[in-house]
Image (cartoon, rainbow, N blue to C red; front, side, top):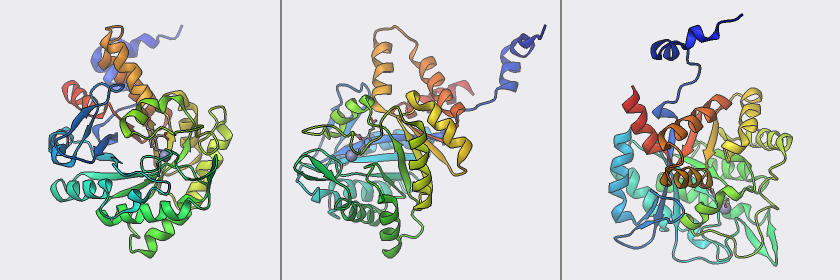
Length: 322
Ligand code: PBG
Ligand code: ZN
């Protein structure tokens, strides 16, 4: 008989033989910034998550800084939306102004800028629309302009999440041509068309006004295709790649970890967060234990970095448990 229980006998020996560790340095906190003043709007479907106007950002940024996680992923919510997402690449747009504010006042915080048009288009799609079609090649120059504008504002990392083909390559070369040779690209490479994004679309006010995102985001049944997407983004110049969502796609994270040697990022998305929060509010689960188990699962699957709305709570809980 093998006595596996010998190494489980008490807290210290369990600690000694633990294979996977979650660290504060693994975590990134997503942040929603909205135009206007004196705004701290709760997002109904995401308890604990708010939209902030720039003048109210200090409250949350102080908390982020105190938590000692490396940084944030920023999403801007503009007032003006149009067919071509012009606010997305306006150097004075909401996201650009927010990044400038953050880098000026919190220079140590890493600011990752999501690059996608859906928060800025009147139709809510991630690309240029013609009739019911989302055009690929016509979208690429707009994404490039947005990436350069965000880098100019001070973004430390550029993270395209649109799922147009070929966008990493054009974004990389536009960044280089504009002098941002040192700005890394974190590509949302394997981004699935997922029902887990719906609370985010409340938070970012970015739901599509017609149809869905299935012609550009991936089919949830496709694991091999996810690896082809990741491989292609690496060949186009991505410095880091992402799998999104996380918990229903742990097999993809593992396969990516086994096959590729650059940092793998997992996005523990809004719906994953909201389900935990809802069950916790009903006292059906223990929130802290569930969150820590989920985050460890994502790391064990092979993620190096986890973007999560639980980041600030998790950082606090890690501190308590040390
Ligand atoms: C923008 C974007 C989305 C998310 C991150 N960037 C939404 C979408 O693709 O509809 C989802 C994040 C989340 O659900 O937490 N394209
Ligand atoms: Zn989008």
